[in-house]
Length: 283
Image 1 (cartoon, one colour):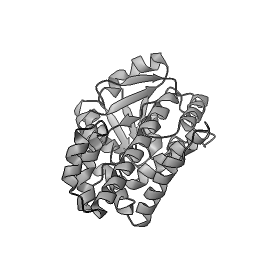
Image 2 (cartoon, one colour):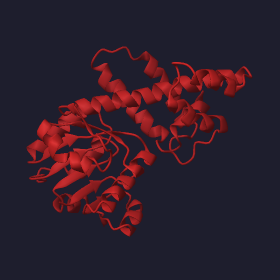
Image 3 (spheres, helix red, strand yellow):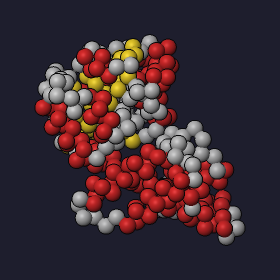
Image 4 (cartoon, one colour):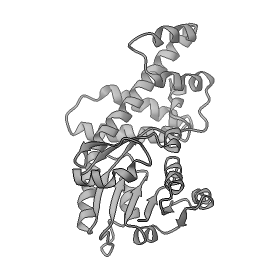
């Protein structure tokens, strides 16, 4: 079995490396050709044409930016395109309604589709310790768990297509909300000339503590947002997705709408490609 891996950005590249290291024949595609050079050096087959990856693989793993990119790369809008006898495993972050719509369109073109979004960033992708959430039939989950094990040792079946996307968005909403709340407290204390380490000593002993606070603390205090594991623009994209999907369920959203404005402000300040802890500078 050859795997076609479409989307070799920050997360996709180390995931391809894990497949190649494990001896899984892999052909990789990325819209930015320069991002493929390092993968060629480790033994991955590369291509500048997504159709070549589709035609030469039975399984296609997608780690693409959004639903529009998925539709484009798979050729879902082309009348003469086919996905016959192909299984599509979508691993990026998209909305549950988008995932269900892609399921219908892939099926109409003769293919199978399941979603397997992941929680974690570049270090976890490199070490195979991503948390993999799967939306599929139970049969699909059993069939493809072995492949997904290369990315995370215990993939979890959530339910049908759409459910894993929903869990992923709920988790990313927490990333935004927790980081935003922590940054706001930190900004307040800095203006009050409070010793931040004394604040952290109390916080770490309380039920309020989350490990992500310490992961982002030094970046915020040093205003060092370089070499991101997760850029600000991507978090804003996911916040917008959550707001759109949750809005359909008549959920009260104004707390997250405030976080969205902070992320927008950070991007206006030039932190789009920087680590999302840059929202601290927006505060």
